[in-house]
Image (cartoon, rainbow, N blue to C red):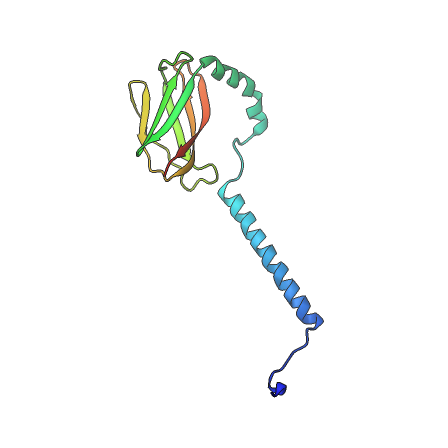
Length: 157
């Protein structure tokens, strides 16, 4: 067997440096890409100025708790169903309801349902895939009190 046809190149310092630099270059590029994706899909901001929002937080929370409302949300087929009740389980009057249905991890599938009200229940057509969903709702009581809540839903497949 003639070994002279196979040219064995020695492992030099330059080759080791090139391999190491390429390895870490790929790692750094992937990290930068993932960081950019994370920042561009969700900024993490809930309010524009947290200090101003904090000035009214306790009063707003106390007013919401004083309403005594309970929220039940469910997806039945292709309908989002939301019911507001008082502490005794009786339906309550809601002057206005706005909600966003979406995933907890991204905003690509967010929907703003168009609700219809009948007999104490709000319903809206939605398109949801199986898995975890959040309903972030803002309701207004007849006296103007704002009621905010995030309701976690699990849609079975």
